[in-house]
Length: 174
Image (tube, rainbow, N blue to C red; front, side, top):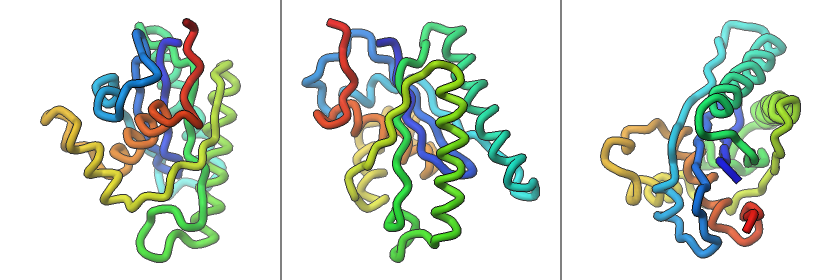
């Protein structure tokens, strides 16, 4: 297993890439964060029609996967957080309209990954306040990486949580 990509879905999804060489199942959250190699945000123009934005999401993820394949980090698994109505977007969660957009965005991202032959796991991440997620990541990140925006911190947290969780851990080739 070379690398894992965690994606925080939406119409401006954030991604975090983790290198898995030498990974041990018993690694703790902060050790997994040391495996973080790259973060990015796939941006779309809010003025564009929804189908154009969804196509741009798929194209953005495809470019990230192609770039990773051409470097030392061929992505073998992608974690995408399963959208839910009580997702961390304020005290009341997100509206039904916003939730449907996140599901559509997730579909576009999954399609792009599958077209590249990359396995996808749609995961139900533990319910945890967004501020707590961010604090857990920021406390273990190097100072240079602590300026990441909130959505990037969510993608980093998702990846590290899935890699350390027995429920979602990748299968090692050992």
